[in-house]
Length: 339
Image 1 (cartoon, rainbow, N blue to C red):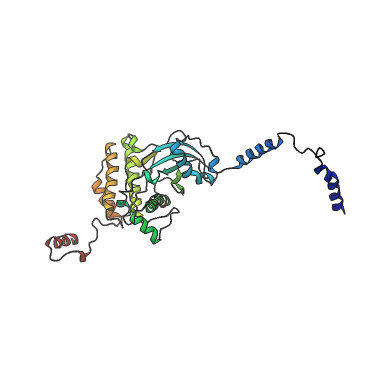
Image 2 (cartoon, rainbow, N blue to C red; image 1 turned 180 degrees about the vertical axis):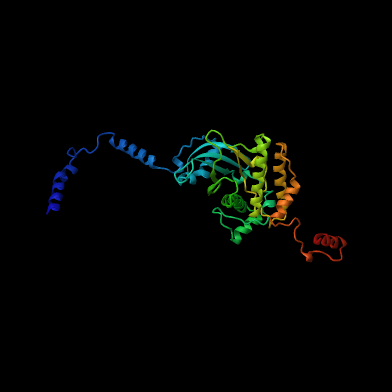
């Protein structure tokens, strides 16, 4: 049979004595060939390796920043959300923002990666004012229902602080998703991974969009942008969202358009007892900037009007069972509240 003949021919080409008698063994590799092939294989494998450990970003991070940056953005790179980190465009006490070249999985040219600093560098002591009534989220943006995890966060153990830090980031990402879907002028969010949020970049490769605080506007344009900012504040309030730290410092300006940024401290008007004061502060800060640009504003009246327009009460409901009917002050308070 043809197969048998082929097998016999193969045997005849390599007789056993050539393999056992020194000096008669066929030369298979010339000196140095093995090492050369090993190097070629290594280079080929390395060229096929698209993991974060093999990447060299355009942005040259300092030693203390490099490991943190690779750890935070590695998932984005390995899943082709980004292909390069070009430069850092903003450094802050809580987070830094990096300009990234988009990968094949994103329909955009440039992206912004907001990378939060490690928890040890953040101060969580003042977060409680914003966390009141807020649900806690895990690293996938899902509600934490595990009682053990809730206990750790309540006790502020080291593990609980890590969970709170992650929830802070997840809350910003899910808020951005909600606001973007409702038409609020915010960057389009794409993905969240651990310590970072990936979103649309506002600007071009040479210049990032400046904040309003860096600009002086002509009165006509200032009036137009003021109306747009108030429209956004009103729209957010209609879907139970208060920015919580809004000012000219976190409103970007690019090609005549505004974009609101930084939403980790967002609060709800219905579950946070201090919500109206926080909302009024946002409106006041915005009005202060535009007043300097020649726009006439009345922040107190505007805040109250927007609040009531969106069916929120200027004074919280009072449980009558908490009042003492024999106390003249409580009786007077209840009477004034009813009126």
